[in-house]
Length: 126
Image 1 (cartoon, rainbow, N blue to C red):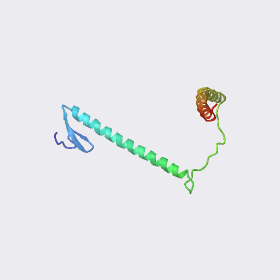
Image 2: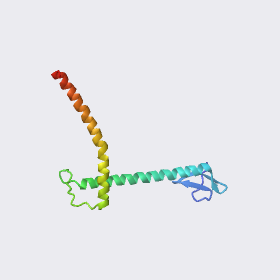
Image 3: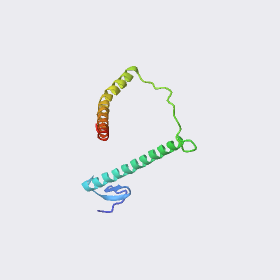
Image 4: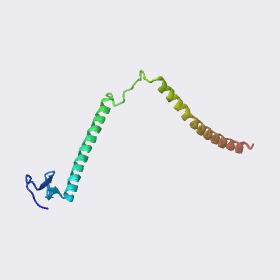
């Protein structure tokens, strides 16, 4: 690695640090990889800062939505604007989803009452 002046045409500086010399007017493969690595590190730092800012905004909004005693405020939904066919689709989907749920509940109830019946048959002696 050679120490190159910041303004010399043969230097490659990344983040204020010399990363090597250019070879024949183009950066060497190692220097290119180091440059790319430094750029990725800078992007990661920027993304972490963005995430931190978003988290801080969410926390401040949560704090602002609570009243003075720290209890969440209640919300009343006054209106839901949904189209007719969207409502039909929702209700048909719910009805179809209820079929396997009812079968499972029936089997659980059958097992429960079967075990309970066996226990009472053993107690009563029937």
